[in-house]
Amino acid sequence: MEEKEISQAVIGRLPRYFRYLGELKDQGIERVSSQELSDIMKVTASQIRQDLNNFGGFGQQGYGYNVEYLFQEIGKILGLDQNHNLIIIGAGNLGQALVNYGNFERRGFLFKGVFDSNPRLHGKRIRDKTVQPMENIKGFVQANDIDIAVLTIPKTEAEKVAEELVGYGIKGIWNFAHVDLNVPEEVQVENVHLSDSLMKLAYNISRSRKEGDGA
Amino acid sequence: MEEKEISQAVIGRLPRYFRYLGELKDQGIERVSSQELSDIMKVTASQIRQDLNNFGGFGQQGYGYNVEYLFQEIGKILGLDQNHNLIIIGAGNLGQALVNYGNFERRGFLFKGVFDSNPRLHGKRIRDKTVQPMENIKGFVQANDIDIAVLTIPKTEAEKVAEELVGYGIKGIWNFAHVDLNVPEEVQVENVHLSDSLMKLAYNISRSRKEGDGA
Image (cartoon, rainbow over all chains, first blue to last red; front, top):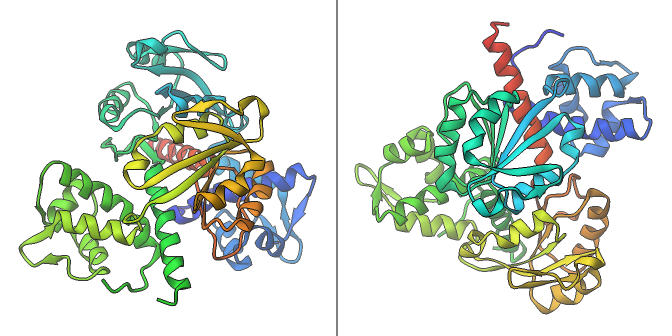
């Protein structure tokens, strides 16, 4: 399939399509209309048609989309048709939670190693992994074809570690540290800024309260 | 300050302004120009001026913004001038990580209770909290003026629990379960869909790789 330039807004919605299509597939459903998808996803049918048109002719008028095919194609677009090798840096609760969450592996995200700067954690087992010292990162990344590093470390350490990872040829950083990293353009960063998300929730609660007061 | 209708795009950027202004404040910096903010935030100065103009006259031409004042005002807009009482439902690694992350409290997000359906976790101490059974949620929410529930439970449980929470009068749900919740409009939901975020990273890596190949 030929790939066109696709807006980040559409890209941002693809994982959600992928998730819903995966659920339909698991339920044994073979075809779905844009209207049915619209009903379960709470997005307009026209938005769905527009989004999916970006990827060529998945659907046929009056016949709906082939669930399995659309699921596979979106998976390919998302790069899920190949495995990704990950390391986690930071073996605290959050790092452990991510290693233990089996669903990522189902999607081809394979946690290969866990690292921490705290010597007391070295040797600790998390699932089937042993926490290693930071000095091992360089050799490990190169020996295990690691393309993604997950940063679950404090922001004071994150900048320096990110810089080193770039030097080791890492392709992407999944950043949970509460800082915006400065990395070269060719290294992809996806931030999960939990505090930002919580503040947005607080804003929406406070606004909804004011509207409720008629203010 | 009079509040106008502000777009969700601007709202989504406010926590980031708040974060950077907090850092400037911690460094003892009193004034900042839109150009200086632009340099550190990697956003255009004109975007910054436009965003901040939504909230009235914080800045003066050629004189810059008062860091402390702007920090406080954005904090008020975000609803951070009042405390929020939270409970966490799901005492696994992710729930524990959130309870142990002290930064939320600094912003007025107070974790009051932790609940789990697994009897083996009942009585376990996490920081200064004891994990309680799910049956206690109702009474606890009402006795402790809880306005936010954090869901770190599997998606199979999340729908039912969310419905119950709505019945108990909860105002907001910070949802880490991998499902889009159906709740009434007056209940605010902020989703942290970790798999979606990781898939977006995979997409950007795969796209960047193709561009690198000259395809």
